Length: 500
Image (cartoon, rainbow, N blue to C red; front, side, top):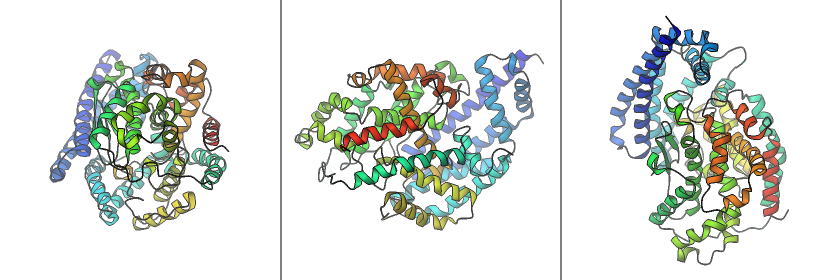
């Protein structure tokens, strides 16, 4: 068969698999946002059917032979297809190591787990989540065994899936640097007298919070014709290509800051997706390059931009216009200090920029135990609580504020959490490079973030997943990844804020 025909056969299969993927994406979005609880069983059945159809296509002899043929002829393929086939071949070879019936059963399991987790969290009932979490963990441990190689063993298999090339050895070194440099700074700041009662006993109308979220979407340049915002228990970004990018946030009357920064964080993810090259939408290398690269964008916008003085110097008057009475006695300076307040707290998504990586270290340590030891799921809340005491010096009053706070394990996402801290470090290194090309403080003080968006589009977003993280860091900064940029960024910012 001529190579041209082989490519056509591959494209035909890819088109069908993308259609099935799109259907699954819509079901997942609906499940997380507004699907009635009573549809769980029926939805799970349909997810199982879709998963089986998808795996059947992927496991067909014709498709496997087509991918192998293209992989053997990489040098004859155009650049984007060459990168795509490399990725597809690796993923396919891994997939073929796992029995299809197990993958289908796992898809059904995950489709049930997220609703069970949400109910368990709302009702502070870990025991309700425990059985299905145990099943998810058992699958992931079997999955690791299927995929182990001479180079990748145990937890490293999952870490590499979320950030290619990352291992326990590399993450241990990264987190060790943060422990030695950042933990002492956190302890020093926590010894200072400081008040976090700026909004105590104040309630902020949820409808007005939603209006301000719409305003922030415009500031950040989010294209509402290609995306939308809804509510969910755990904020997230979802999408399919550059033309359908959706985010969620949550609103609490007594937590104005939570909705604002959840929104900015998710819009960071969405900006990345919307600014990928649309040509890549028809391929399997569209979207973000990796989980950590995606987090570099969400946390860049949330923290480096969104918690800056210059950003709020421009946009705080608008926030005050929505909450005239509630904010009339709150100065810009007080608001700025409040959104950068350092406090050892319970909830990762609400954590300040400085203590955030400590929350990630807790999860990283637990995931290593889960995957590489025989720890029982009933022991996990105690382990979680002990690590929070060790790393952040605080007691965990309930599982809702502890081990049940994140949705990730309900989705089987073991190996994902470390990318949050790594992404923050990527972002700090990008900031240093961006400042050489732009007057950063001037740009974030403007009515919109057009110049920031354009820089990130040119250096990161436009490439989608056609470049790996190492390549993108080199394109954006002219050098390989260096975590010291992150350490210095945090130390400089918070030493200045707290006059240390």
